[in-house]
Length: 488
Image 1: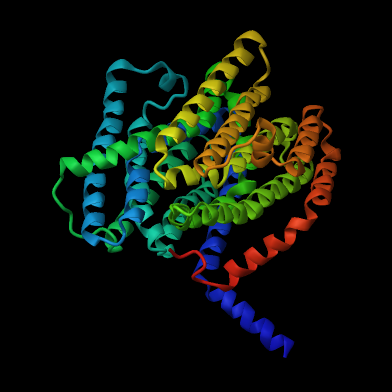
Image 2 (image 1 turned 90 degrees about the vertical axis):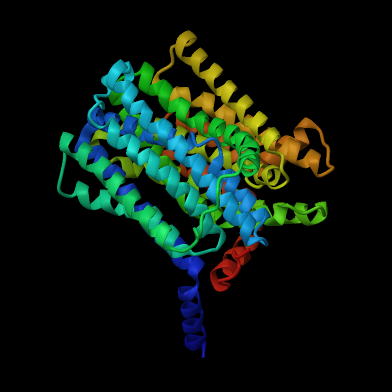
């Protein structure tokens, strides 16, 4: 009896397309994690620093799309009842992304004539053309990906998000050194081109309509502030990487790239969940009934945010042991720990920043991101030029920026919902004391390099938050058993 019931539950979970997608993402994340370790070992800090800068360029190209993809995403969700309107938004968005891609390719031409110093420093002049091609392909794929996410056609998403990591993984088994750099870029070209062909053949992009100024204007008006919001937020982290690449050695930048990859890998599973949740969340939070909105926000935050911190504290406890198996990076615990404690701070804003987007408050989101980026830039320069800190402590600028971003997102979202409160009450909503106290303990232990004491923040966190794990269990169970739980 119990065996039959257990068997039926396992079958139900296995047939759940959301679980299959999340499983594929986590397998891909694991492959990416292993690949990043192998690449770091095979290339060494110098060549890994060059590869890290190549990825930095690709990230720049991917975020500078002037908000077209995100604008189309929101507009399609808000107008999904009209197929004609959706098709017009898609057609005009493709046109705008094509213009962006022409600009990206023009950078390769400019470098041939003006020889940018930073490109010469990282010896990427021969690879720059292919890096630009990768950036253009990613922009098309990111645009079309939203259509398949909205319709919950998860196979296409899984292919797009897995093909490059798989190609990279198999490539690093056979190559090393400088030739590996060329192979890695080739994997990005082939993988993204394959995904683009699949997206085009998938049927979500129907007949294209003529380009209309009115639709271009709507997309750009919404996209401009979404662009400022997204690009400034991502530039918080990218500017940190840029500081380290410009003011410190290639070896130190390589170590930082390794540390961030390792730290960020902990939250990749939750990023996959939030990726699936986003369309439904935008639709749910676009509601005039503030009580419904508040309830939805509370339910998702009570699950997502504590899990994020739990994963980080578990990671911090195991990092010291893990690093012992990678001799080239065994003394990098402090930067790995600080990276982990920085990336998790973004989770504090989860829900509130989405609420602002769902309710057409892109301008406020843009303002928050611009202010947070400005703080990051100013603090980063102060730490480098005035205090002359070593490279691992530059990340404190990003910590402060993420804290400010989360606080302001919480403050303005609650204000638009008709709530007001003191600084302390808003800060507690953004960063609850049950998370803050073990977090501060972990920061202190990492700064003083008390590697083997990192189990203490985990135990302290579990002690403060054990009552909330019942809700977390119920939510995970519902998503696992209900294949339509994440549908619009």
